[in-house]
Amino acid sequence: MKVDGKHHRTIWLKESDKETVQIIDQRNLPHEFIIEDLKTVEDMIVAIKDMHVRGAGLIGAAAGYGMYIAALEAYKSDSFDKTLQMLADKLIATRPTATNLSWAVKRQIKEMNKYGSTKEKVEAALKTAKEIADEDAEFCKSIGEHGSKIIEDISKQKNGKPVNILTHCNAGWLAFVDYGTATAPIYEAFNKGIKVHVWVDETRPRNQGARLTAWELEQHKVPFTVIADNVGGHLMQHSMVDMCIVGTDRTTYTGDVANKVGTYLKALAAKDNNIPFYVALPSSTFDWNMRNGVKEIPIEQRGNEEVKFARGWLEGEIKEVLLTPKNANAANFAFDVTPRRLVTGLITERGICDASEEGVLSLFPEKKI
Ligand code: MRU
Image 1: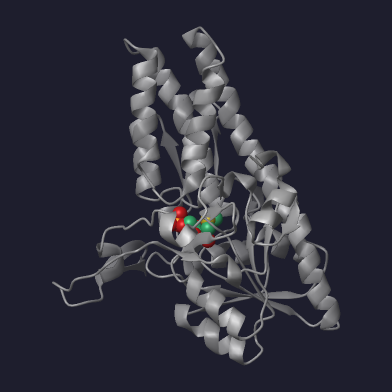
Image 2: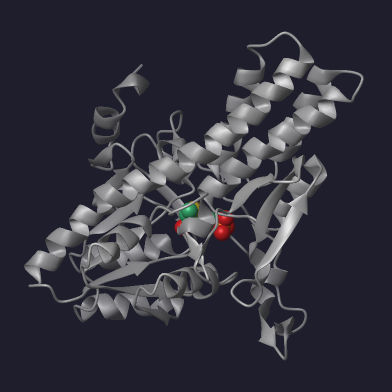
């Protein structure tokens, strides 16, 4: 996508040094656009854990490139296999809910295992890292094409009046390699000339909506309004939301959706008001082993300082201010699970399906046991 008119992805190999990965450090967006060099697996681990990079698809792509750097480090060590496995385990432990992470690490190990020499394994890791990133961008583009038809239909029902879409957190291009998932149908519809307007949940505590989704939409000139997290229900009761589209960090093959905390409440409000609630995801975000999302999906808990403090831009720099009493207890559950019964449909790279085992397997029959 474009930043100030120039095309960017969220992760790439440095032009002048093919052993360095470059990312957009998302912590200071929208106020500062910083590109960061990652040279070691430790750098990548910090970048994922501390959310310089974040979002399902980008975490997967970061893990893919992380495994390439891991292969380079393993190549220089006494035991390739032992070092690689140790670094893979460390990468997987960084963010527990995002399934793209372990998916990408496992894909890398499978590809490397096809080769005997360590040199070939490193080459395979590089090729696979690029493939994971390219595939992510390609899948998101297709999600945009499929999802835009839903927006187009609503626009026709409204005789061309703006389609009001509510989204939560950031499942935009910053959360992937390019295009995004929840925002891809919006960009596609907007590019086709369909009138849209986006309600952007601020998404406490890290404000990915207020900071990142708002910035993306602004860059693309899509009309939007940032709202406090608890406003959505009111808007839905007053016919000010035509549909919701969110992303997901892990979706069971039965259709239960883990996404940024607060998604479940929006889905409940949408159900109560008969508003379609869609989830957009590439197939890499499906968990093909879990049946019951509420019981089985691990929910990441992060440091309570993210809840107690607010970060923002003041006098040319990022500042943190304390919101709560100094010694207040605070809990930081980063995700929640929306049961399939509240989800109208899943928008994938292969098309749209019901949020059910039958629906998902009809699009991905090769996953049937
Ligand atoms: O904690 P984050 O920022 O990595 O959370 C992931 C997300 O951005 C959201 O949950 C998103 O809606 C789904 S992932 C594209």
